[in-house]
Amino acid sequence: MYTSPVRIQEIYQVTRILGIGSFGTVYDAFNMLTGAEVAIKTEMPPETTDSVAVLPYEYAIYEHLRENQGIPRVHWFGMYGGAHVLVLDKLGANLQQVRRLCRGQLTLKTILMLAEQMLTRVEFVHSRGVILRDIKPENFAMGLGRHCNVVHLFDFGLAKLFVDPLTEVHIPFREGLVGLGTPRYTSANVHFGREQGRRDDIEALGFVLLFLLHGKLPWQGIYAPSYEAKLRRIGEMKIGKAFDELLTNSPPEFRQYFDHCRGLSFDQKPDYVLLKNIFRERMGREGWLYDWQFDWLDASALEKGTLITKEYKIDLKFVEQSGPDWYLPCI
Ligand SMILES: Nc1ncnc2c1ncn2[C@@H]1O[C@H](COP(=O)(O)OP(=O)(O)OP(=O)(O)O)[C@@H](O)[C@H]1O
Image (cartoon, rainbow, N blue to C red; front, side, top):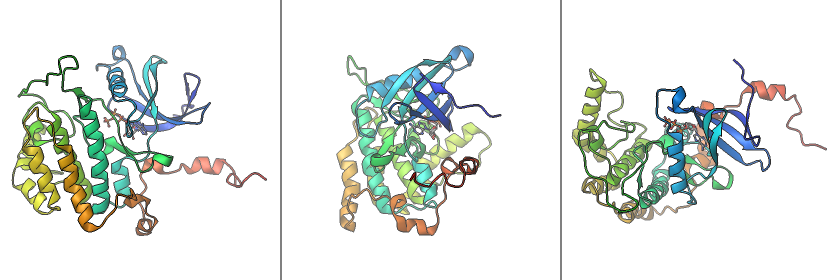
């Protein structure tokens, strides 16, 4: 069924759906006064659904993390048409999409450049007393326009304060918890019901980088009789032979990276500089520069043929409706 585009707060003109998340719909829109492109995340209030409202919480996290490069800015938050609405900077393709665009193959140089920026983002979020608990390629996206070389971190629906802002005391270690996050990338601790800390975000980031490098992780597509059994099995693989083989088949820097993650105690701060230096040294040895020329920005890579994901396909219906001379400059 066709639903006509709507306007929010009379200023934001919605143009299409960008994505449907677990808590609501995200729309593509622009500010009619400034032309600024925005993404509008909506969520119905809890009285109309069974779930607890997450968007006001996510908004609070965005405010807590505001004014930092690589975190989308909030343009507006409030209620509109009975729904919670969060208006954010619009981002470009996420890392899962750019990976597909490059036919699933990213060079080590691109992975190392991504690692630098991704570690910086996670370090910043941690410096504000927040852990993410949902590190995955879909939650990192490239910026648009002059920010197209900047990796952004977004979607803070599962983020949590790990220190009390008043007392600065770290949350206590607990066990027997239901694991949160995406099982493909979460740290092994999550599979064994352990409370997450900074070390678990860092470990998950390591799995994301290995996924981007290899295009697959060993625990993808395994069989287990139940969901719980599968989670346990993946956890065992993440600390067992499968993990060791994964590191053996990866650049040696990843073993150093995981040695650091796995050596951290629950409330210990990761050594972000040490982690970045592991990757920087490899860049240096290879003679590669941090020029932010990622694989998908390199025109020669396009010769291999790209796989544009559906979000980037133009609906021909609109092009045809525009008439044959829609692209001609006005004379
Ligand atoms: N600022 C943004 N710019 C561009 N696209 C966005 C933006 N925010 C969200 N999206 C798109 O909307 C989708 C869903 O958004 P988001 O991940 O924030 O919602 P969610 O309900 O938390 O989803 P999930 O359950 O997948 O984690 C994303 O995959 C992305 O494609």
